[in-house]
Length: 240
Image (cartoon, rainbow, N blue to C red; front, side, top):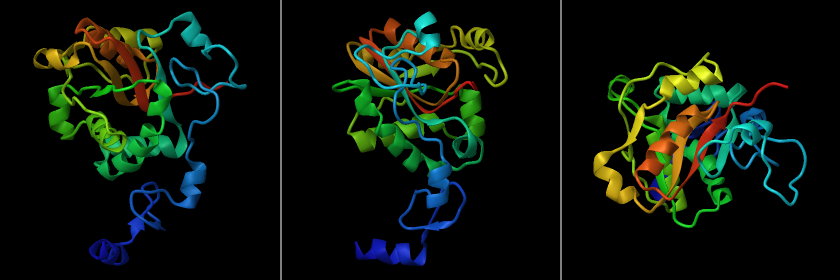
């Protein structure tokens, strides 16, 4: 404890968004906290998108999920994919900013109880080996490992595998996103015994259309998983 205090005095913490000095480590300064678009209040129970109004007696669903629900059970996200949240996620994915994992996973872990599962297994969305080789880490796997540590849940980091490399999902329509990832994932053949009969939370950094989560969910259900819920660091929210 004394050593930790001494190190904190010598190397004070920095805001993971702007770099300003803060108390503690792996935190946001007051200004960045106020500007970070955390999701609060009523959300769609299926995809986690914020909704207007108050919770009623039924299950709240957004228009998109009422029209075409995903194959998973429930979904949540910690942030809106905008402003400082978007900048932090891009820094995590492409800027080697793995220090963002700890606060991000803490925000995500706070949403886990809302998924209503008793003893779920955490499975991250996988990267294709060529992309993993270039990036050197899978940000979704790092998030899942830290969420598991915080929430006391087991993590199966290689429960899913990419059977082919897909192009980026950015700047694609919903239909193009679905076609891009169709058939791209399978349950890791060597991990099927650990998946069978389990409830699973699939972890990823961003949910846009839900196409990636859908592919992951279908692959897990085919492997004998009883139910899947999804958890994203950030949710893309349509304007208007």
